[in-house]
Image 1 (cartoon, rainbow, N blue to C red):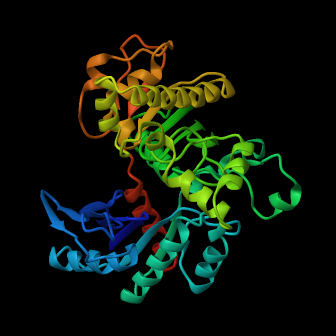
Image 2 (image 1 turned 120 degrees about the vertical axis):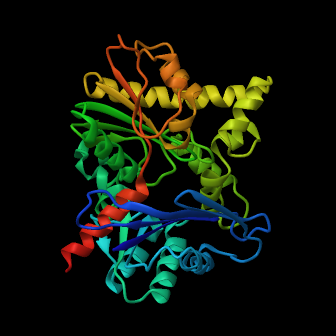
Length: 395
């Protein structure tokens, strides 16, 4: 069975095609790629087929992620990568009613549409993409997967907000995100040895979160009702005083103050607001190294927010056995890892921390009391696994 995994952003569409069979535990990657800059004359379409990578100018071929679906399916046919037998989607928010990864039906789509208010900048585009893909491939199973599912093990004291009950009854609570990444970390680490009991996963990329795990289950996390809160991120501010949000709404021009504030907090805040630079950690670090005061301050704010999250969770769990770095920054930026752990009792091996490589990498010093790992995020593979299990359960 070949499983196509689609992960749409506001101007991008990532895809992976896996071969998932009963004989193998892990799906095998056949083809992957990303369309970036959708709707822009500078857009590109990069694909990798086993050892081959192709870059194609996207130009105006796709104005929206919905239109990009056709390009992905055309590329799969062009690459002769095999037929698509099932499709899995990463959907940001399931709403208040859906609690598990689920095979998509009209009823499920209606529930997702009803819950789109929890993630109005993400879910509507994802739902439109799902409908377009179902229209193009109508005779295969389609499965929606959610980052929030992993965090359902959190106790009530971690997920309940101190707000009036009517709102809580409508499903307003801490859901948590990056759950598919955390699940992939736990899965990989179980393959190489005993799982550390008290562990923190720092998923650091354009979006960032820190999650506390006990025996592989989420007990708390920094993101909340939406992916906007928590630690400082590329274009999102992380946690804010609610009074500041109200202030921003009042200050926004026009009658759509809440929409303007929401878009600003998701797309124009965070590191890009602090630095005035593009959402690119390499460029921010280069600017800081050249003496750019705004970049230097932004890095201090970012690192401090991650340290506060890890420190709080360490206290919550009575100590830590391991810290895991994942995500684009967590996996590839050795300086960020060293700065996050600077001034603590956690000892890194500088050579290990600077080393490159695939798979799980221990980077703590040999005499360190706490383990530190770099683990690749494998969300697409985990989605393919959930799709495989969902299809098998319905056959």
